[in-house]
Image (cartoon, rainbow, N blue to C red):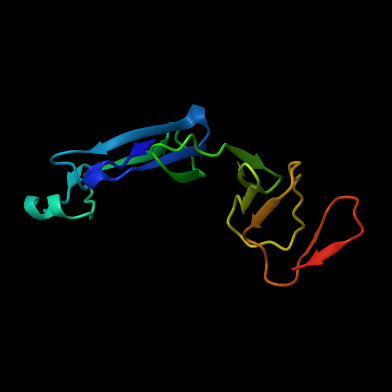
Length: 165
């Protein structure tokens, strides 16, 4: 969680790291004086006049959070969900990871609407059918990426009615 407090700001950023998995995810805070633009062991300064910096809402690269896998692998998948709120907001929406045979994504459970996002693990477009179990509730919105161009049909299991997209 990151709070924005400069210039009387009230914002909060929540970050849910879904991939790499918790046992393989390393988060590191990077920055501070002399490390504002730290990359591969060197700082690439972008000096802003301190007087100008106090008067602006432009945020320089003072700090960042870097996500890295702890274990070396030939390939790594990253999936994060960012939510913005006021610092006084009661809470962020619950987020869980969702995996299917060839896709990964997330479920964001809102009070009235649930959102599901699915992405192919390999990033390649596919014409293969996508099957996902929708949670119970009044409304669910689904975003499936990496589909081959063309017409698609959405149909609830066991239902006769279908929608062509």
